[in-house]
Image 1: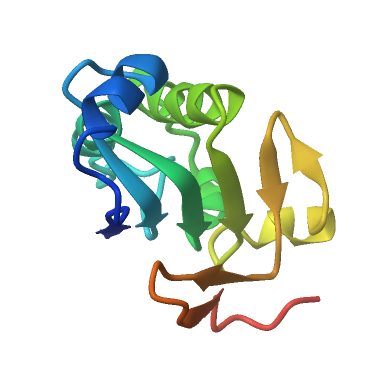
Image 2 (image 1 turned 45 degrees about the vertical axis):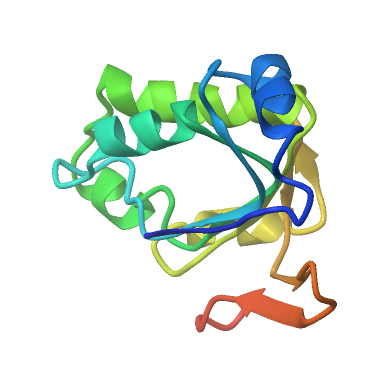
Length: 147
């Protein structure tokens, strides 16, 4: 699931921003929310997410729960190149200036001990608050209690 919000001053700066941050025709958003990707499973559509990421840039990218499916990986290792490519694309966006915030869910709970730490430009948090362009505050967390 992916959600976006567009900047108020999107027009005029979008083309310039997309040339700097990624694909020449990328849409520039204030924020992207990505959840329930389940990298590490055969059902994951990493190819579709990678295509989306190639065509969208954002100031902030929220990875909200179940990005990597640790449960499935513990049972049977499955990690094709497309799953690697998604990780590399997210890390590249962080390196180029996007703020990437990862909020672990129940399937990637193994990341919870790393809350408040940065890894290659990705901040692991138990929750996050996003302020919209009109000043509303959105609280993001997963339903799974932190340990």
